[in-house]
Image (cartoon, rainbow, N blue to C red; front, side, top):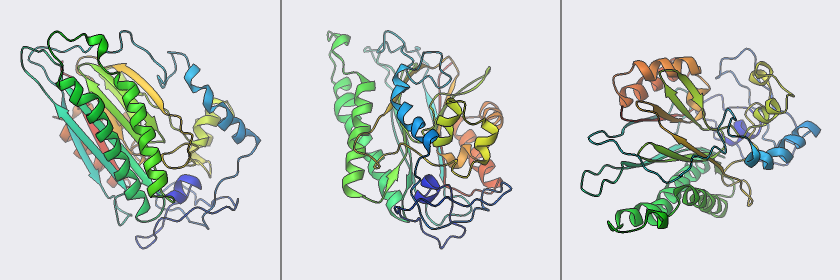
Length: 348
């Protein structure tokens, strides 16, 4: 994902085209129709200037924290008690990871970090996993640097302030004194935002970071990488895209069908490294027995329909098999972008 495509909706047409840098003009992007994702004609880099409707979309972004628990994206779903880690004796999380450059790009600007700990002892500590996916943007090397910085910063902050203290707990320690992982995830993303802003002024990235403890998952999210929850009953997108068209859909100013063809359908109004005042979505969910948590960059979900995501994941022999098959499916459909996918399967 490049800065021009994110801020204007265009992609480089050849491997020689590096990611363009932002400018201060307001010309719209040109998109070739119909929809082979590789058939996108880049124009001069621009920064979108919001219309009245688009300004309304941005102004209402602050209302996200008031979204009801029944929101399809679960953006503010709270599950008391938040830190009740439920483990299943003899049962453990398993996960898979795959990332691919795709068929068009000449470098991979996605980044992924995984930390996983499984413990069998009298302490009864639950499985613990940190899974971070970031999709960089902003020039040939700026995007890959921004995503790398973000994954490292998130991992370091969570390890220092949650994982290590959790490992040092005594049997008689009060669980109520345990640090709150959702708050630490939010702090970690804010620190990554500051680091990218300072070190890569022309770069940016999305981030979707999930901390899984037993059957409870905490997610901190910015941008349009996604997290899905997949069960035998179906697939649910549990993060919301911070894109212009998604906001306009929520305001009933676009239909999903119109959004799919909108010339600025990939414009983001929120990303790491693009603003000093960053809002971070927080999602808290339980993983039903046997459920799969899927994290991915838009190189996957832009190419593979949700129904196919579900079918591949549920029919695969393992999370790793599912990841490999999803990469193949995206590449079979042109692979115009980098593709990253992580799948975490709950025991059951």
